[in-house]
Image 1 (cartoon, rainbow over the protein chains, first blue to last red):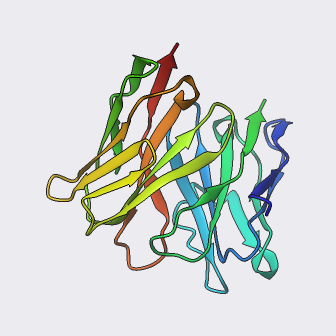
Image 2 (cartoon, each protein chain N blue to C red):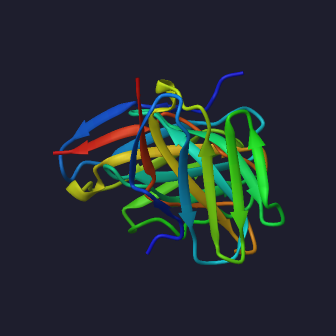
Image 3 (cartoon, rainbow over the protein chains, first blue to last red):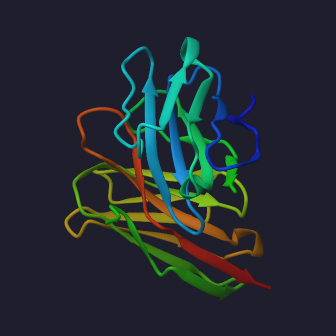
Length: 114
Length: 113
């Protein structure tokens, strides 16, 4: 079946604008994760959804960042009043459940803030 | 500081040679995973090794885990040009819930013909 799908693949916007990034996980995967990857760096955890439980938002860098997951499937990561330091690749992953499961990643959204 | 730190940061070898990458971490883990990332793409899962396992194989890949030293290694045997990529270790730490992963900064492997 299809893998994790992210859109848009690239987004260029002006500082101060809001952006929405979309993630469509693998069908049947109950866990969904957002990560941020800055140039040449490893991945930084942002937020995690598991089924109907309250999301783990411990990695969100500021209150300008928020995410939701509707119907236990598609997720949207929203960044309000973007800053230049928000420029990065935003990666989404999903897994069947939690605990000893590999994560399946999308190709990411490359966000550039001018 | 990083939970997982890879060593070396960059590695260049000839096709056919073996490549070894190391990962060290700080806190107790549930499992450790290795991922590969080609330029401009997402991460691809390679191997997951649980905390009670010491070695795991998958094709040309061999992963070891030493929980007493809090370290892991990834060995790629008989490397190919197509193995050129960045390799990341990621730890699933014992937080009491979920398996959010903590990634290292990666090893950039270049396999030359």
